[in-house]
Length: 253
Image (cartoon, rainbow, N blue to C red; front, side, top):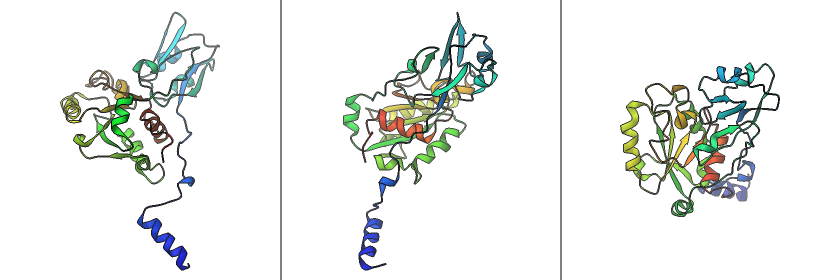
């Protein structure tokens, strides 16, 4: 190695510079959700097989609540007619009602952003506090990957903080167990306004498989949720796209 190459290597090390063009900015892998085609006979086999009661059928109308779906695909497996197809699911929505889909309707959802007032306050640097309200830790395993060298979400200005007092965003996982209600309320009060609350994963949205137990069935209703990210658990690809788009960080380097 000559002197010029040595100096370049030292500068890159000191200033943490690297060739970001070799690392994808947005990842294309999408979660797949079930939706019937025109051959559906409304036999209810899919609804009966759904363990979270995400699918409902009435008056020849098929409906799925993606906020309750755990993406197990059991509904498509038990459909004798093969009517249940797997299509791309939205990465996130800003309104809980947008997670409800009916047969024959489009699965496209507008990629909206949080309010401009909040985005103006946050700027280019956003501090996140991870809040586990009783999850099985599947979501935590996926979220940990956001900060590894491959996804490296910190390069977009998103970083974790140790205290809600320093947080702009609360990234919540878990069905909000009864034992966590008081603690979660304290976290919300401690986090300064304006804050963004994200329900990440089916449990945080509706309770998922834990709904009906000693839980509140998700944080919606216990907190003013700004962003809903469906999945069980949501993959790092999905969370990355959701955060960058909803927080208005898409395209920043």
